[in-house]
Image 1: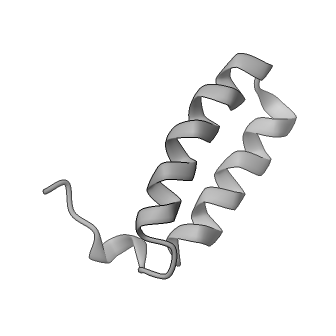
Image 2: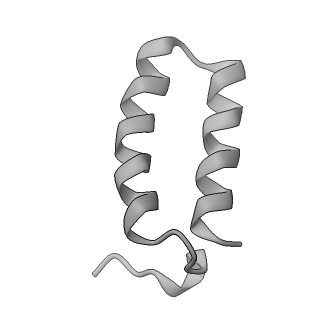
Length: 48
């Protein structure tokens, strides 16, 4: 799964099930992460 698709699925879930502050906090972090690795596969990214 590509990072951009995973980010969108994660945020869609939280739009329906979380409070606004949670969505805002995750949204800003994931926007930065998604901008760095938009077309990479999730399993190709390590913690390093």
